[in-house]
Length: 279
Image (cartoon, rainbow, N blue to C red; front, side):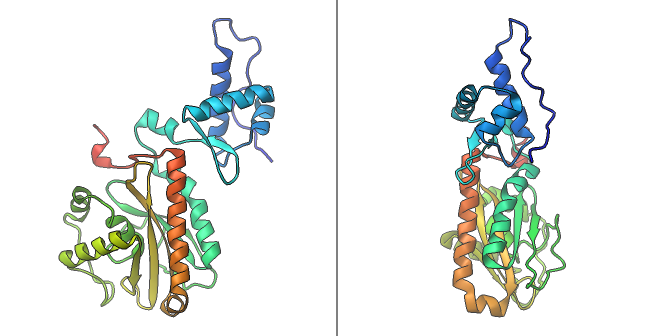
């Protein structure tokens, strides 16, 4: 059931010097801001008491201007990222996590493995979502907000590999690269070579580099301008990856591509480079 929002319905007694169509468009934006999964035109029309034909015209105008999008999967209208970055010149990480979490959920459901999302905020690579698989061994050290060990995890390397040289240098400056297992890369030259290989093939893996007997597969997520913004990954026991690795790899790559398409549709661009925030 659609929850009541704080949106005020159009006032039929509005002052004559106000433009009714602009007011109704603003009411639609306010309504959709309270419905992040989206609404169809009929529900918008009903909720705001707007004629359905008029409602379609308003929605199409807002969509043509880039302020809302029509989700190609659900066919529901929802806000694009334009409202947020028009005001703030960037999108909040919370908004991005909200939009990308369904992709993490879908990856867990299609692979039956624990799935993860990390966000690059311009300073840190932060683990932002975990969808557990009941059959996987829980990686207890990985909790929401964790930002260490990215040189050793597919989740982190899938982001590091696509940073430009300035971003990578900034990220690694003064940062230790501890050995979690004998397989962990702790030499900067070796890590840079490995990141180049990841960039060339389009995905990241770690083979017991963070935890013994645990393999991870990760894929990058890019914003609307093609900048690295996030990563999506799964972890699983090494034996299960050896038996089904190629199929799982394909599904992780597909998940990263689907998330990238969503950010392109929503118009999220230049999201979190903190060093550009005051420019």
